[in-house]
Amino acid sequence: MIMSAKMSVNKDSSNLLSKKNWRVLLVEDDPLMQLGLEQFFADFAEYTVVGQANNGYRAVEMSLQLKPDLVIMDIGLPQMDGIEATKRIKTSLPNTRIIMLTSHKSSTETIASLASGADAYCLKGTSLKGLLTAIAAAKEQAVYLDSNIARQVVQQLKLGKTNQCNRPVAQLSARELEVLQLIVDGKTNPEIAEMLYLSLSTVKTNIRSIMNKLAVDDRVQAAVVALRSGLV
Image (cartoon, helix red, strand yellow):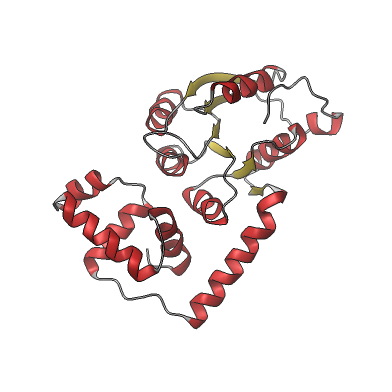
């Protein structure tokens, strides 16, 4: 876990930072991690932490209000997860850079994060040099993946392409495609119900049918399959 920027960072890593002052929003529900990130950025004059949020809804609110240059985003957040929050922030603020900093190592969540618009994916416990490299890549609009998960993600993508060639995706109804599109857009069940003029129970039934047809276990996996298969 990144607990302090007092740890040694070589000069080459420091040179990765641009001279522009970047306004940073921290989205993290662990108080110790919040403190560690705050200390980390305090050691670099190029960055100013303008706010902190501890859930996904607050992250979206503060992003729209503060318009930060950089968001450090956790995935496992209460109320709304970091993937949905990233989708919503990127929709309104496409130039804001978002780095996922998480303990989640699932390739599904990594792919879903990138599909939502995240610019980089780092694991908690990464070295300070690694985080600086991720920030530098995000600034240059390049995608950065933590080396501990990059190979796993590439293998998953290759497997997905093979499966698409050998096993067609089950046919979805027009209504299910509408629901699936809204899932990809990060909408909650009540929001989907309101937008499509459906009851909440009908929305849940459609989502269960979608997951069964796509052979996935949750909404995130359904969104990944949809994006990778070109369904939406």
